[in-house]
Image 1: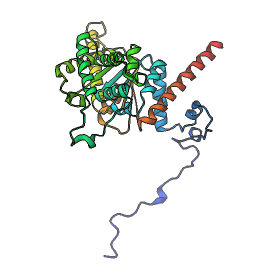
Image 2 (image 1 turned 90 degrees about the horizontal axis):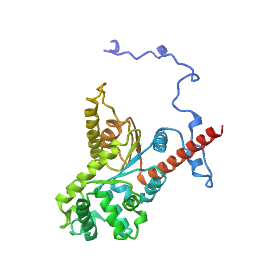
Image 3 (image 1 turned 180 degrees about the vertical axis):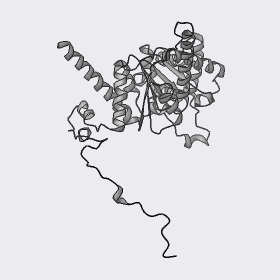
Amino acid sequence: MADRPDPQPPFDPARFQPAPLEGRGHLVETDRFATPVDLEAPASAFLAALPDFLGVRKLRGLAGAIAGAPRTLWGLGGHVVKVGLGPLLNDLTARGFGHGFVMNGAAAIHDSEVALTGSTSEDVGGGLFEGTYGTADDTGRLFADCAERAQAENIGFGTALGRELIDREAPNAELSILCHAAKHDIPVTVHVAIGTDTVHMHPACDGAALGAATHRDFLRLAGLVEGLDGGVYVNVGSAVILPEVFLKAVAIVHNDLAQKASTDETGDARRLAITTGNLDMLRHYRPRVNVLERPAAKGYDIAGQHEYVVPLLRLAILAHAAAAASDAAAGGAA
């Protein structure tokens, strides 16, 4: 057996032809490396000093898209609100970088409780088997009343919540997205699946009124999407509800566009050019396909904790806007 040849002789390394490092294509260059900044440096210097790779490039790309977009809609899951980011999002709308909010039920609940009491988010595990989880009477009655108010006044669920909180003189209204939006006529839509939120456990909850209110908000969202050509939709922290709702809103708008195209001379249906972003701690299927891929002309996927990604994104938006204004002023002077 020892004199039999190896059934698979080794590859002869002499056949491999090395090439000089110089002249090779590279994906990394030192001029894109991070540079240290002093504590006293302005935020713009900090942003400029970040390494120009991967997540930072996505952050800058999304920020640039928002800074230059005619309209931006922000889709919010509950975690975004309960880690204290409402004031930053309100600031962005005040500066012209937010033209509407799309909330799931959890986001609306946390925002309402912040407005009413300055606190939110209960210990689910601690109260589940004691029978205390989800029993907050104030929150449950608020949502039941607002579902009825939406019907009575022919307004959306999100609008009803914001106006009701203002009417009740919520002590922390300045921290609330719902209140800020209601004060400044910024549309907010709230999208729920009945049974997903604690307020649906409350005996005052009327499923018919709730369903009508959230369905009206779906149609209002379709109207917002219809005006989003050239704009941006950012999904922050919703893995299921909002990606599904957004996709259906895009579908209903394009159904109308297709019907209109069938009657014109070309017969070519117009597609809305929407840039999208998804910000979340984990990557999920529905945000990827229903936000970033299927409906988007361009999509940016940014993974990280909301409590530092959203503040960074806000600063990047402001930096892009300031740079664009500076360039425009320089061009005008020339």
